[in-house]
Image (cartoon, rainbow, N blue to C red; front, side, top):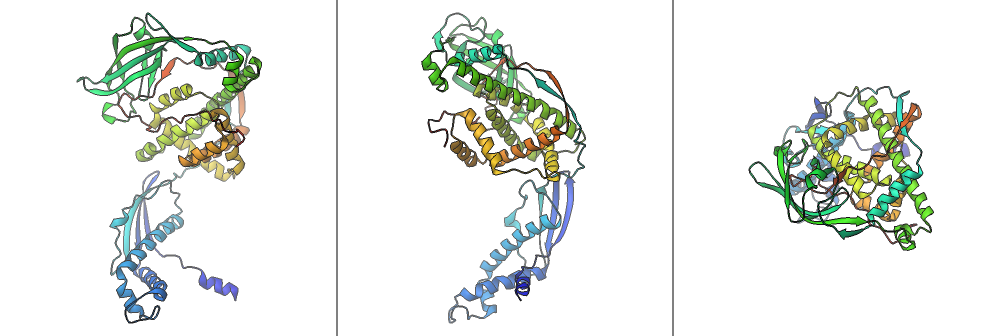
Length: 484
C-alpha cells in the first residue's frame, strides 16, 4: 500500500521536445518546445493548488467553481505556470541531453511567453564542458628542480627581510639599484592625450618596472643620471592583453617626475626586532623560520615546474577552442587561484604583485591553458574518484593563515565573503589529481636557483584599467589568538 502511495505521489517529469546544435566545442544552441498537453497539465495543477485558498465574492474559501478560479486569477496563474515550466524545462534539458553546463544559460526570460494555444517554445545558448578522449596520463617523465637550502640562502633571505624593516634616510645624487624614489608618473599617447597618472608613488629602483599592463626594461638606467625635481621620459609598449583593446600593443610615453630619493639603512637584529618579526626568541629561531619559508617556496617552484610539464603533456592533444567570453570571465579566477597558491606558499606581497603583473599581461593565453588543463584534470578526477573533504579545506585555510598572519577563522570568512570557496575547491581537486598523475610518473632531479627579483611591481595600469580589476588581497597581521 505504501509503495503504491509513493508511486502515485511521484511527480510526473515534464515532457519536452529538444533540439541541441553544437556551435563550438564548448557552446550549444538549444531549442525547446513544451507540448500543449503539458502546459494544460501544469495549469490544472496550479488551479488545484489555488482552489483551497481562493477568495471570490459570494463563495466560501475553497468552494468557488474551478473554472471561475482559473478565469479570475488567470494573470497570476500564467506567471506562476510560465516560471515553473521554464525552471523544469531547463532542468530536463540538462538531464535529458546529458549536458554539463559551466555557466548559466543565456536566456531572455522576459521574452518567453505562455501562449493561449499551441506549444510554448524558447531557445538559449549555453556553455558546456567539452567532450574529449582522456590523454595518456600514466608513466610521464618529469624534470623536477631541487636543491638543499643552504646557510647562504638563509643569509640572503634574512638580508632582504631586514632591508624591508630598514630605515629610509634621505639621499642625494642619482638613484641606485635598491634605492626608493617618490615620483609622479604620467602616461600619454602619440597625441599627448593623458591615459593615466599616479601621484607621489613609491618605487624601489630595479632593472625593470612592472606595471599591470606593461613592463619597462632599463628602469635603473633611465634614472641613473636623474636628480630630485627633474623629469625623465621613456617609451613603453602596452601589453597585447591590456584591458583597453584599442591600446593593446601601442607604444606610449612615460614621464617620471622624481620628487624625492631615499636609501635603506639596514637595522641590527635586536631582541626588539626579533619580537616584532614574530616573537622569535633568538636569531637562530628566526633563521629556522626563514629556512622553512624557503623550503615552502622551493616546493611551490617544484609544483609549478611539475605542473607545467603535466599540463603540457595532458593538453598537447587538446586542440579545441574555448569561447572568448568564457576566457574573459575566467581570467580573474585564474589570477585569484594563483594568488591563493602563492599566499599558501609563503610569498610576500611584492613577489605576488610581480607574478600577478606578469600573469595579467598574458592572462588570456594562460587562462586557455589552465582551463583545458582543468577540464582534463576534472575528467581524470571523476574517473579515479578523486574528491575533496572538509579536512582538505581546513588544511588549505590553515596554510594560508600561517603565511598571512591571520586566524584560520578570519581567512575562511574572507574567502566565503569574496566567493572564493569554489576557487579553493578547484585548487584542492586539481592538486590531488596532479599528485595522482605524478605518483605514477618518473622524476629526474635538476639544479635549481631561487630567482633574483629584477623587477619592481606597482599597482598601476598604463591604460587606467587592469585586466583583472580586483586588488591583490592584502595580508594584514591579526592580533587575535592564532588558534581561533
